[in-house]
Image 1 (cartoon, rainbow, N blue to C red):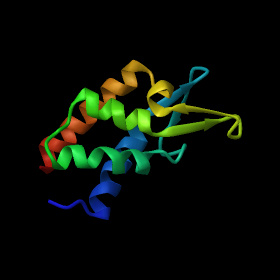
Image 2: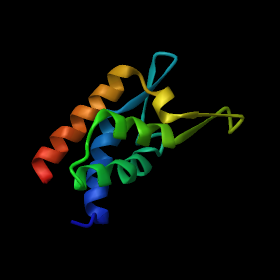
Image 3: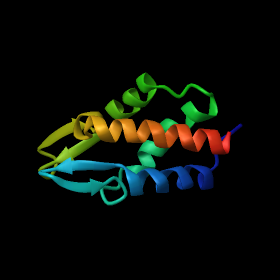
Image 4: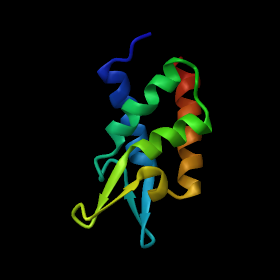
Length: 101
């Protein structure tokens, strides 16, 4: 199966609404940070190939860079997310996969 833009956009919408970076006890949702679509594009192939797992998701998160302070500092999205959010993302992806594949 080849991913299509609507499928990635649907996944991105779910990610963007439910997954947030914790910034000084304030939630910056990935949709607001414009990181939901790049993340969906990276994890969708894992769903298509039935290769969803913590290692693959963490690799995708590590691959995405988050600019802080106007680009003075860059950290991986994996480092920007709490463990709770990483677990929530895994659950979200598992549920998405079970409904759509």
